Length: 121
Image (cartoon, rainbow, N blue to C red; front, side):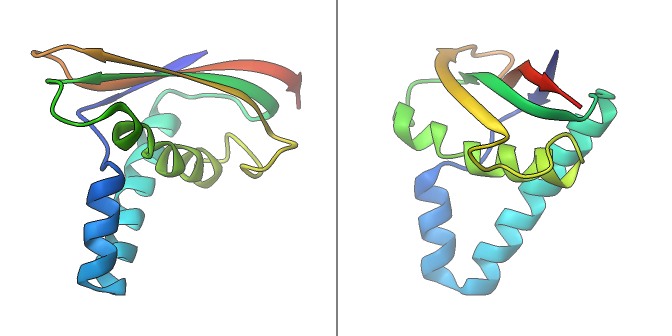
């Protein structure tokens, strides 16, 4: 199963800058993007999974952000999947392997999340 989030998520530098500004700004950023991920996951009508592997393909509009900076958005992805009820938790028992791919798509930046179920509910 797969779902897509249009655009991009904040990177590690964005999260660090928000935290340096204020705890409220950091919490607001996390809440906003966790809610966004949850909304797209619910809209995709994904079923609950007990345990899964994940392939996350990050399509950036350009190569300005370092790959490790981009991939930091996975925290928001997994928190959003928990909030949407797709995962019970984002711990070791629920999240298997995570594979990241970073590509460039100037016209359509997005995140594609493929969920490969290991254990069904």
